[in-house]
Amino acid sequence: WVLTNRKPEHRKGRVQLIDATQWYKPLRKNLGKKNCELSEEDIRRIVDTFLTFEETEQSKIFPNAAFGYWKVTVERPLRLKGIDPEREYGAKEIKALRETAERADDAPPVIKKIHKPGTAPDPLRGLFEKTIRGKQRVVEYEPDTERRDSEQIPFLECPACSEPGYLPTPEDTRTAIEAFLRREVLPYAPDAWYDPASVKVGYEINFNRYFYKPKALRTLEEIRADLLAVEKEAEGLLEEIIGGSLGTKGLEKLIWGSGK
Image 1 (cartoon, rainbow, N blue to C red):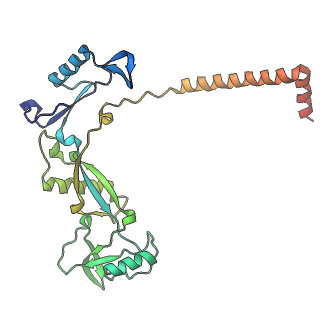
Image 2 (cartoon, helix red, strand yellow; image 1 turned 45 degrees about the vertical axis):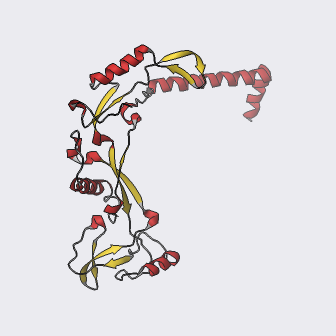
Image 3 (cartoon, rainbow, N blue to C red; image 1 turned 180 degrees about the vertical axis):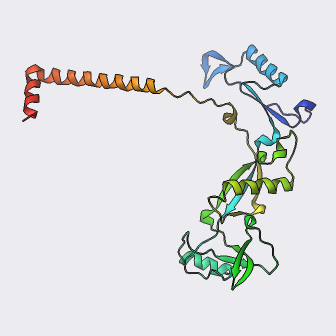
């Protein structure tokens, strides 16, 4: 790792990853688990790649935001059979219901709070519009801890974050998270929401994501040739086993006897 807070202008807001896994010299004799080392040539190659600061097969350059993400807790409502779907339940009542009532996907969600008239609905943040005793009200549902999930949303969901050095603003964060949830979560869980207070920021550098090269799959012709070879070998072994243990006359007797 080369870390500094005094980057030249062309490196600011960017991270360079170098794959030097194939640049090494094997040792003549292992030193414990160590079986290779960097030669002077390998070191020079790494340094030159770093100083050149260009995109190659072994050198990748990314904006800082490419490694950042928001970890968001996604909630689903607690759905229980036999409850009043238009009533607000207190904490003690909900605790008792969790122990006695039966969960079901088609059961009504448990309301933990009915807001005063005039509260604006915001379903993605857990404020749902619902008809209560013939009137439109905004309610909050009790989350089901067994259905709680989390999403890791990349900073690059924010278009401006692709600019080197740009850090997402609170508005960028809200817009990116909600756009992601609408696209990736709500089509499969339309009653889901997230708690903005649960949002955490993280960074991860996964070299395999950028440098891993999967092995080419074998062609159908190669697989077919191998299968035919194995089949032919198996037939030869069978003939050898039967012929060797019974002899020609014994084999004929076995064949004729099995046909009766």
